[in-house]
Length: 232
Image (cartoon, rainbow, N blue to C red; front, side, top):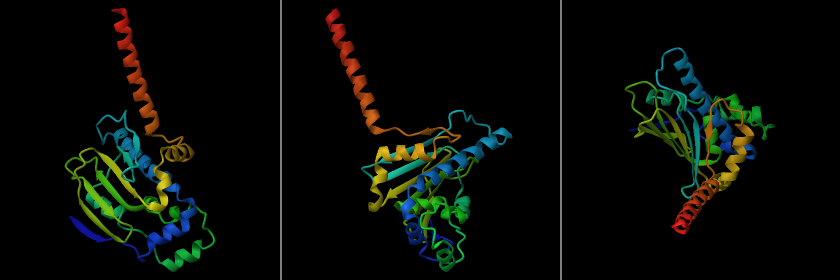
């Protein structure tokens, strides 16, 4: 297990992200779904040029809401990352200074594009999360899966993950000021708003619909049994 500091020039990067994007913090889902889509399309490209041989017909992105555990899971079956790639792409953030950030965006409090200017798509998760985890396994054979954890400070933990499937799972531990995102209906609305026409299928099961479906099946079973008894 390794511990370290995220490579940023200022230690208050996360409060800055929350402060300047708070009014538009719902875009975290758009950004993370976009990353998951990119990871999937990269793998499809490798497949198209013969560098990846497995079947990709059923690849999808899955979103799960754990209301009791106060967590949101975003899971893709894309290219994944090695431990070295996590260190390169997640731990290094290009921020020159807090002063430059504040000056450049002082009049753009509602601009959801702020994150994009610095390539901070993944870090939008901290607008709603008190802690974020990454479980990822590269498509490359022989590479161990990696588990990255950060609580919103520049310090992180990176260790071996038990994940066995190719791809990446982002787990957001939702902060108390963002509990609205644990509502199934809210996530459904955001997926329809931002991700309706994504080139990769999205799986999100509304618990109420699932419960209804189970109840309907139970009722049908009871009806069939009742009909069989009548026939006898």
